[in-house]
Image 1 (cartoon, one colour):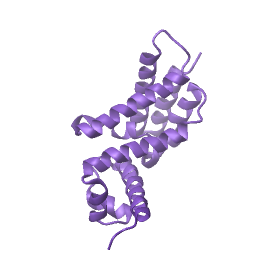
Image 2 (tube, one colour):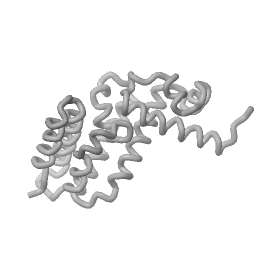
Image 3 (tube, helix red, strand yellow):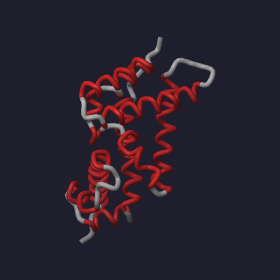
Length: 181
């Protein structure tokens, strides 16, 4: 039985949404094809006919997650506004729909070229967004990369510790360090 183009596109979107969420929650190596198909409510055949492999799905899910995250931050008009949202308790708690960079950074050195390339593009994109929001400086691109590294690192640490008070202090300290004068 053939699936219509519309149904195929709908299935693809369901798989991407489920994969983007699960990969952020459990990591790339923590999610198997069974979990992906179950979360999307589809079969292995649907997944493989759409993407061909788990690696290709992961690369596309990474882009999907970045697109949805970027859309949520698109209306940030200042660096302080962007940082306040990024370095917040809500973002820290929102693993499944939070920053894919923070969720998957530790796994990237062990991934294939396609996934690492998409991740590298994500870092560049976040750097450009920050550079556009940051006050001008002698080296705005390098400053933007330092801000990205600080924000991502702070979010990773805030999620990693088992002490809520310390977690909040990490986020607050990063915001304070990066805030515009």
